[in-house]
Image (cartoon, rainbow, N blue to C red; front, side):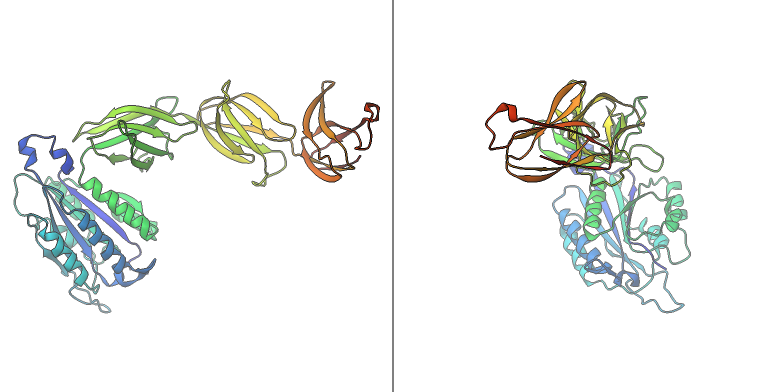
Length: 463
């Protein structure tokens, strides 16, 4: 039974970006990239997904993708389809239902042929993935200077008791190099083992994410200039991850790529394909951000970009209070620097680049904690006491609230001049209100009222 929707891209040989060809010698200028799309037209593609059937959405996205390849130099396209010729019946399936529908030919003429063929396909049969991959190796005519790519789009696992992994191994034994991507929708992870021999899995939960990942995969097919971004911890190991990276053109400051940094299944930084014609500025959106400028990548090579980005956790907590909606924020600054790095909510955890930070917690009164040391992969806990509440009832007149510390009045806030009932959340401690009624015109009529606030309790004050 078919349980997921994925795209598998197989790279045969080394794929190059057509833009790079301009920078290569005349022999490389004549190299061709040949992309064979293998399209699943099995019966399960009729199933509902998002705003249409899988078949309708896959047809639309594939035709759009093919259109985007129009005018790309030194590129030829072909189309193989399976599951479209014979209906699947109970206990019966035709595992030879796979056919090269559009052969490779030069120019953009094949684009219209492929689009027309895709539109006419009806989903009917079974899912002979292994056999389609095996036959596709024969779909590429002999060529001494060609780079060949296979992109397989399907919604199911192998249905003909054959082994795509065995086909993969056989192709590698013939000197054909495979570099796959699998995009899963509603993926049952128990089936992942069947594709471990083939490659990398990317999840597509929606039509939009499916389109985005398809575009990403095709861009990688057209580009063999790769980049690995190493985000280094304090021991210079590339283990920091799960943070957004922005690649800008250094000269124009135009945003070129945005990616979420990822470690692959082997805990190595994932590989990206980028255009080598830019000089880049890389901004890694840690807190605070780290930046590297004037990055030049070598065309046709694997490039490594390294940045120091060691991080640790800052956990801000209120004692005895676990609700995330505290209404209290904390201003985070680098020690000795008044520039705000972040505003973090209490009862939240956030990662920061290792170092010392000054905290201003926006309680009443303000709470200042300086030189908080954030260490690699450590959780630094800052816990403050739970507020109490002052319920202040007063008549008209000026009033100010102070906290009493070491025999001194430290201003906290002003109260309303008009008659009012105010509820003020305060840290535990001793407080004083200084008040004069509006109709009093003598300093001697100043009223002082002291009180104590205890965590979790209210104190009623009448003026």
